[in-house]
Length: 444
Image (cartoon, rainbow, N blue to C red; front, side, top):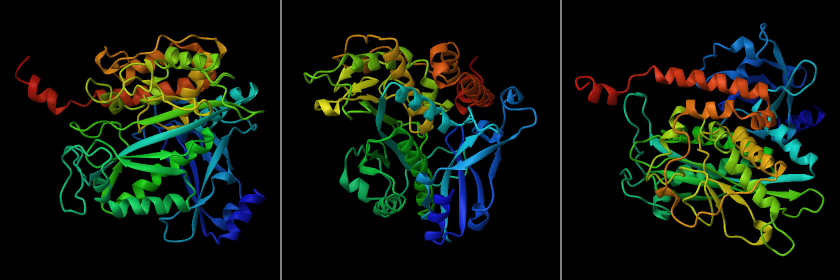
C-alpha cells in the first residue's frame, strides 16, 4: 500500500477509481477520494462478480455466493495504476485483486482465474507469452436498439461502403479518433503497437506487443474502456460486439501464444535443431481437444455465435495449419525463437482474462496429457463443415461435461460462469425477432 500512496502523492491525484473486472469483462468498483483511499480498506459485495450482462442475477445466485452476500476484500495492484486521460480532474484508476475474508484469492474473480492458470505453468518452470490482436467497429450513435447499426460519417462527409482492408486513406477518415487513441494509450502505458483498417466498414484492428498474459489482459481491459470514452467524445460509438452488423464481418481477438522456460528464457516450442518441439505439438493438441469445451470463454455472448457462419472469414473448427488463416489454429511462419500458435476463435467481446486463461488451460492440459494433434490442414478450412458450437447454450453444455478443464479453471468458478451465461441465454431466448414475425406470422 505504501507504493500506491507514493504513486498517488507524486502525481497530486485527487480521486481514485477502484476497478474490478467482472465476469463479462466490464469494470465494476467505486470512486474514492485519494486521501480516503490511502486511509481505509476497500471492500465490495462479492455478488458484483456474477452479474449478467443485463445487470441481473441468476436463480442460482445464493448457491454460488454466501447467503449473506458477504463483502470481498480488495487489494490494489500498484502495477496497474494509471492516470485517467479523459477525467476532468487528476484521477487515477487501479485494478484490484479480490480476496475472501480468510485471505484466499476469491474464486469468482476472472483475474484470479487467469492467475491460477499461470501458477500451474510456473510450477512446471514455464511462462506463457501472449500477444492479442483486437478488432472493433466505429458506428454512428444510435439510441434505439430496434434500428440496425451503421458506419459513422468520416471526415469526407461520407459513410464507408466498399471493403477497405489495410487502406491508409480509410484509417485517415477517422484521424482524430485514431490520434487520440494513441495519445491516451501512450499516457496509460498500454502496449498498443500497430493499427490497421480491417475489411468491415469502419472496422479496425490493434495489435498489442507480446508479453505477460496478466499484464496484457489488464491492458485489453483498459483499452476497451479508453476507446469507448474516446469514441463518445467524438460523437460516435466504439463497439467490441462480435457481430454488430448483419452485412459486415465479425470482430475477433486473435491470441498468439508461446511458452518459455523460466530459467533459460528460451521458447520451449522450438527444439535444439530448430524444429517444432514435442511440447509444441502437445500444446497444439490440447487446444484441439479442449477448445470445443472452452468455446464459451472465447464466445461468451449470444451474439458471439453469429461470427461462426459460412463465408464470414471466421474459423468454424479447431483445425490447425502452417500459415493457414482459414483454420481456427494458425501456426505463423516464424524463426524458432518466435514459434507460436494463433488461436483465431476468440471474439473481441470476450473477457480477456477468461479468454487468456481458457486458451492457456487447453494448452496446459495438452502438455500434461502428452496429446498428439491431428494432421495439419493444408487446404481451405472454410469449405469444411461447421464443427464449433453454434449457440451459447450448446457451448455451456460442452463446458459442463469437461471435468479436466473445470478442474484447471476452478469448479466453483465454472459453475458460476455457466449459471450466469445460461441466465443471459434464457433472457435472449424470450425475445421474438422481426425475422420470426415477418416469415412465420402468417406462414406456419
